[in-house]
Image (cartoon, rainbow, N blue to C red; front, side, top):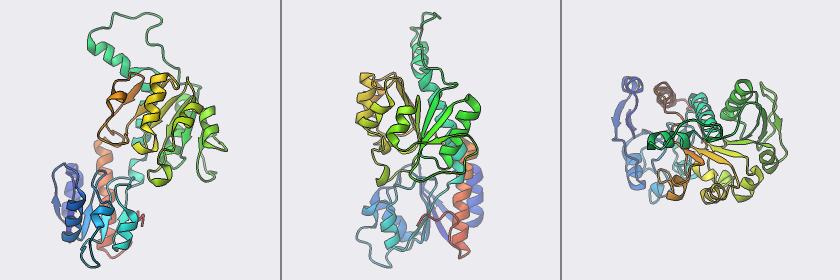
Length: 319
């Protein structure tokens, strides 16, 4: 079975994929909608990644039977780069890799929380610029983390992993907002009645919700005002979950104390106004950037491909 892998994989994942499929690998460049459609015409199964544009445009104009593809085995948990309704209408299944990314993404959330709280980006810049003139008692005073309250927005797998790190590692109180009632938690945490109340109660807010139309601009000006001038926002979900213009305004005015971002609304473009601020820590989508994790993601995508090869529904089917 011919497989298209849209980006280079780790060596271990590549070996495993090649052992089961006749695989073609593309250079490290995202597919345009036209290229995505052409790929679906040529390959029965495709392993796409985050920025490949399997949008409505990619499916437009294709008649029944035109597209050879039967499965998009997405490399990653998020799949908002794939138009699920258009894929379903074309008879194409979509799978993802949920379990493989949980701990690594939670670790990045904690990295950004600590960076924002302790003004680490600003401090590193001071040292690298050659302008640091030595230690003194009031230099770069940030916020203590231990014993503070964290508000987690989205208590799925990743949210729960973040909550455990905050509570068990830093003695933080945990409050959270989730669309449905969450009962199975291994730590003490309080589900709040609303998003605004969660933010009002939090010293640090971490956004860990799925992307998509239902969470677009979930965090805007009103939510940032609720977090308040001593609060910090961390986003490791999808860039458009946070209204970037509202966040920039809040950081510029001091309406919130700081932020830590691993994702952006128009990724990879990051507004100059955001890059110019030192009360925000900016990472280049490093959430799963560990070799073991990226290999595990590739192997999980391979599991879904093998399920299809064996005539079974993919184990991580999303549509």
